[in-house]
Amino acid sequence: MKWMKERDLLIAQTMAFVQSVTGKKPDADLFAARPAASAPPAAPAPADASKSTPAAVTIPDIEAMLAEPIVAPPKPAQSSRPEPRVDFQSEIRARVANFRAHQERFNREREAYGSATMAKVHAALREDPVPPRLGK
Image 1: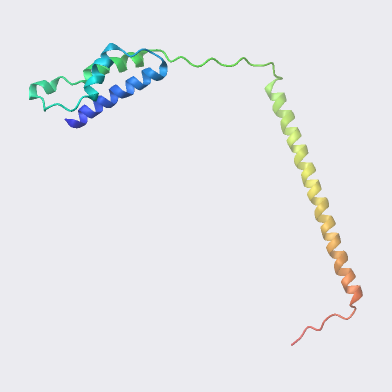
Image 2: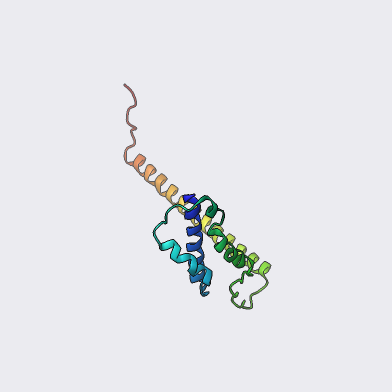
């Protein structure tokens, strides 16, 4: 039974938090349930008293909140934009053009590096006409 009491107290605290966040004034029923939540635990109740649980106090509050319509926040006013399809096409074309320019730059740099490396190799071969001996 202790877990049921803890559950009911948690529901009451959650409802109080939700109402404080939404800016609503707490219901009188919730205030009636709150002092019981902060009071020290009482002696165990007789078996007949266990049939009426404090959840009965908070369930109508939950049902009332669930019945309220959910109001979406207002959407910002949309500015006049060109047609989205045209906008996407122009963005894709610009990205493809940037990618091609990037690839061309890499190709030029790779060719320049390869040419410079081969020029160094040829220069080294001209300076030392006798190749080093490969052997044992």
